[in-house]
Amino acid sequence: MLLKGNIFDELNRAFVNTLCRSEAARLNLHEEFAAFYNNDYESICGYLREATLNNPFSAETLKDLRFRHVNVIKKIVSRITSGIFTKDPVISIKGDTDLQENLHRILTDCQFIRKVKEAFCKAVYFNTVDVQVVWMPDSSKLRIDVLTPNNYVVETGNDYLQKTTIAVRKADSDGEIFWSYWNRSEHYLLKDGRKIPATGNQNMENPFAGQNSLASPLPFAVLRIDEGDDYFGEPNWNIFLHQKNLDIRLTDLNETELKTLHQIYFGINTNFTKDETFRAGDFKQINNVKEEDKTPAIQSITANADYSAVRENIDWHNRLVLGSEGLNGASASTELKAESGAAKTIDELELFEKREEYKSTLYHFMVNLLNVVVMVWNCYNPTKKLPDAPEFSIRFCDSKISESMDDKIKRYDMALRYGFKDEVDVTMEELELSEAEAIEKLKLCCERKKQVSINKQ
Image 1 (spheres, one colour):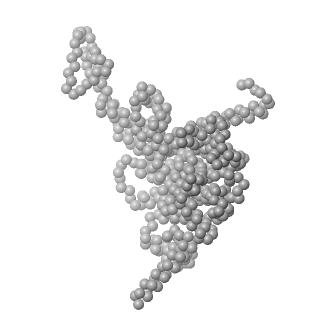
Image 2: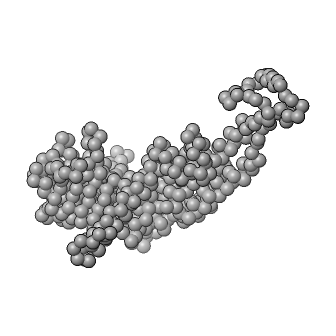
Image 3: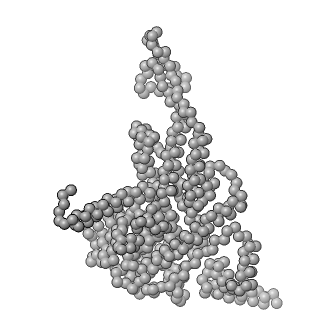
């Protein structure tokens, strides 16, 4: 390598080049992760061809091979994330009724809860996702985009978990790829290496810079399941490799079964043409066979495979992966066996602690995302502004494991008897209402009881 300038410049240049190559490798890796998560069959076949070339399939076999693909990622992810959003969390803001109604309308229009659920499912698989809040001037509403790591790159400062710049890969109406670039002071588009101003932003300035907001001037909120050695951490290799290996094993099993069913024929001294085929009842005449020649014959090859053992091995791998994720391995078995109530209770207990940890992670993510929503809304709606430093309250529904109605009544009676809950607390918990809504609900119930009593008299 030809060195120019001082040694520090050359070391820095080499370091930057290494980072670029590393980032390109990361994007390629997450592209493969995304193909399996999104169930993109054609892309999946491409990755499986690379993985199975000469291991065990030859290049000739791969030309016509159609891979068997059974998506188990979504089932595993949905099993891990179930039980947290059985009902929508109650989100409230400190302020009057009009403020609460305005916030509710904004969150409903941008499908806030649905997008949080989507981000959570993707984060369990990718580990880290970024969520962008976008203002749509045509409809005068907010839109929330969930970005997986294959569609954006970031730069970080002293804290590698906090981004200072982010570039999001997008496509225009003509299908041309471009990057939407954001930092704390700038926002522009990158097309073919050229800076292009976004619509309505000819100065290429970040419209959120300098706002009095609890969120950073970047309209993004990050959801990260586990912290790693860099911004993105490590995706869920466990689920990804299991899905990839499962497809290969199923394809291998399918090909072997087909060859066993239809058999592979080979001829000895038959002199048949290359493309000659056989049908039931065919008669093939072989002439001019000399006495010293090998006797003409047609034989078949059948695979001596124990298919039951192969299927059992695949089931074992399924159970192993689910067990490592804290799930019951029986849910992946192909055997239709009834599961006892006690076993189901134990399964839920195993997931309960993990769900409580997820709730804590999701709580902080939702607060950050709400602050970003407020920042973007206030920027484009100065006459309908929400408070710059809002106080949010988020309450998830409680996870009750195998609680009967009788158990629930006894639990509420005990809470009321010992005084650590009152009727308002019980109403809030059972109906998932805010304190003001619970008080109003109780007032209506009391008035209704009085009216019924008067009518009886």
